[in-house]
Length: 284
Image 1: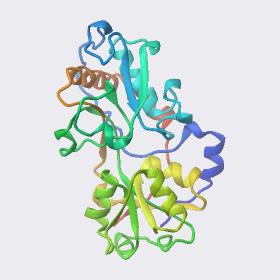
Image 2 (image 1 turned 90 degrees about the vertical axis):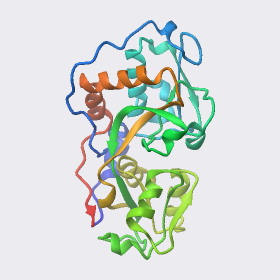
Image 3 (image 1 turned 180 degrees about the vertical axis):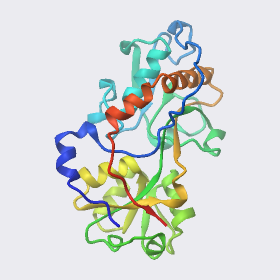
Image 4 (image 1 turned 60 degrees about the vertical axis):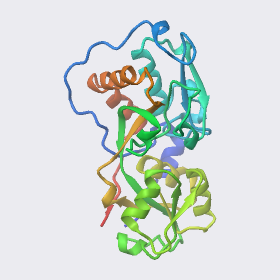
């Protein structure tokens, strides 16, 4: 069944409270040793500074208003929390922008870590390092009113339709592995391109992570509808901070994320920026 309630007015009134789902990996763990150290002693791209990469543009609820320097939005807030654990003041954080693909391509990076909802996968680990996960989510199918997909209630209902996602993402993989549409997965350069294609009627549905699905259907898409989560992908994609392959910062950044998880900071940030949600059906 489609997911429908008066989300648009709610989110336009309080856009920073974009609803989200997924299970944040906040299981209790043993106390960790303090991570904070002398920032000048860390092997960062620029001595005494922490350079953090994100998308261009960066979308809500991950970054509010495409301004990561404000610290508003879940990923922007996580980035500054990690920086603080590493001993950096907010004024010592420098932001750079990258495309999704270039940040996970082999080669020397212009950032110390990058975050733009990168799912941790074995294939990506061949080219980059990942920190411990800071968020866990699921893949979701969305459409618009009047689409052939609007009445879909099962995965079988989707097989004969045209379904797309950003290429190189776990959303794209979910289409191929879980839905397995007759026409194959339709590839787009970004979620923004996939959204535009859906709005233009070029595809019947697209797949994105659930937080993005809720935002797009409530704010960005006219008549947006959530069809449901993909049963074969509900184990959850784990988002990790991306670092250069073999980075000397990987262990310290992971320790910082672990500390934030253990002391409840990640949960507090999730509650603040990824508000509770009514739920979306799981497609079978």
